Image 1 (cartoon, rainbow, N blue to C red):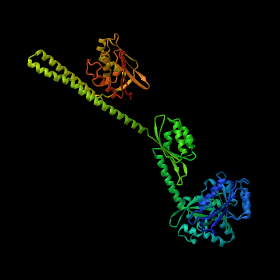
Image 2 (cartoon, rainbow, N blue to C red):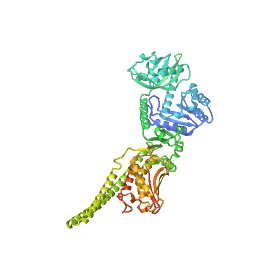
Image 3 (tube, one colour):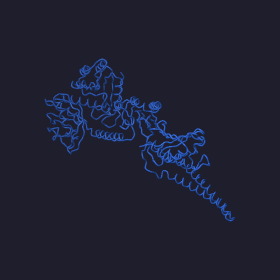
Image 4 (cartoon, rainbow, N blue to C red):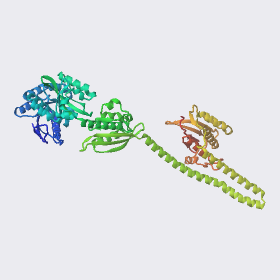
Amino acid sequence: MERHSLAGKGMRYLSRNTIKILLIEDNEVDAWIIQKYLQDASRKEDGVSGVMFDLVWKNSLSSGLEYLTHEDVDAVLLDLNLSDSLGLETFSQIHQKKARIPILILTGLCDRELATRAVREGAQDYLIKGELDGRLLDRSIRYSIERNRAQEALLESEKKYRLLINNANESIIVAQDGLLKFVNPMMLELLEGYSEQELIDRPFTEFIHPDDRTMVVENYRRRIANEAALPRYAFRVVTRTGIVKWVEIHADLIEWQGKPASLNFLTDITESKRAEEALAFTYTILRTQQQLSIDGILVVDENGKILSYNSRFVEMWGIPLDVIESQSDERALQSVTGKLASPEEFMQRVLHLYEVQDEISSDEVILKDGRSFDRYSAPMLGASGKYYGRVWYFRDITERKQAEEFRERLVTELESKNTEMERFIYTVSHDLRSPLVTINGFVGFLESDLAKGNSERVKVDLKMISSAISRMENLLKDTLELSRIGRVANPPDVVAFTEIVQEALDQISEKLMERGVLVTIQPDLPSVNVDRMRIVEVLTNLMENSIKYIGDQPHPSIEVGCRLDGEETVFFVKDNGMGIDPSQHDKIFELFYKVNKKSEGSGAGLAIIKRIIEVHGGRIWIESELGKGCTVCFTLAEPK
């Protein structure tokens, strides 16, 4: 097997600056990971780490035993399940071969009990592969070597034992019968201010934080009773000045002066705990921000596993709980594709971004239900550029899009209104000018005829002036009426449309009878929410126009009813009269426009009708051909 020398600076607690490690592991990937961790540990410069690790890797028990026959090592990292040996037998053979070498068991989560048994039979410690990191491996190796040497020193002589203990970088104590029997200088430094004499024979519980005493005492009791106890755990101690510190304990059962005792190695982890708490606090802040975000957030790793999401994301997409809890990005995508207006385009973009890992993306997603989402995506890249996955943000912009569309419609409507206003002003000024010109002309005639004493011509002049004034009055009246629509209105009522039709018929019954017009009302007309008086005015005006342009039809008829165009209700007034040429359909609703210039009225009637319908949230149009009758159609807002 290949031999790896991992160089670094010396460490203070060992007599030499090289630790020789034998790794017996048949999994090449695991072996490589351990090698990498030891390389990183060798590069540290903090004075405590920085040991040079000399790593030898063997991939079977037999090759490991063969190596130990000829070479000495400081520690063995041992996987119990090898290609040529399984379980405790693997440990037993190594332990019998080199009983004084510390052995650290490498195990998986499922083999924890087996590893614990190996520790009880003489292994220094066990490490779970899935929870292993460089710091833990470095520390565990050094601690195992140190514990092993401490145990050997205790067996060899009290002098060697004290020399090793007193120069250790960890706080070391021996507890027996619940009392402190030995403390090293580092323990005095940890508790700040006590002398050795003050601590010896005092209950160790006095220095443990009240909230942690039960746990520590229970583990101590189990260890003294040679029962299964935690080999390593953290708790808090309290110094003489009341300062609380976090320590991590590694404990072993030993014999002290002929009785069972607990040998304990304590490492001050206060700073790392504070760092963990700070990290946890930062995580809490980020998680809270994520949960309160108006955006739906999804975080997926490089393998398509969902790492994180917020409730807004689940709510926006309506993803089932079992799908999101499966942590499968593929299942989540499958659950939303049926909701998309363009699922293929959506998936193509997703697959592209997973392939082009460094791309930042922003686009819009349309759903079948009419909602719109802004979609943002960015890669998670480490300092070295390593790709860890993607973050997806989804923001519901439906209301914003609707507001934009409303604004565009409003702008279009305002532009239309401005055009209409310009046309209105032009039409009013033009049509009002005509009677003024008439009046002005006949005033001149009147002066001339008065001067001549022509009384008959004077009467004609006055009649023409009076007619022009009447026409101007009608034009002004209709203009005023048009301007009032929408500003002056009656409160809307929900009323059956049939009732409105009947009221309009009552107002023009004499004209209908005089012309012999047959009026048909479609049954079961719906209810409408309208200004009743105005809609009566609309129907009255439309039916009067039908009577006016019925022509010489021998059997004149008018039909009032409604039809469904899709989901829209369209009301209509239909006659069998003269009809209107399609070229006139748009002009017919212009102010003062008349198909027949000689017909009665100002021509403002249909303009007024159009305005009334628009105020009611509807629209109006003509369906007609010359000589084939005329149908005036209009819509109204649905009743609320």
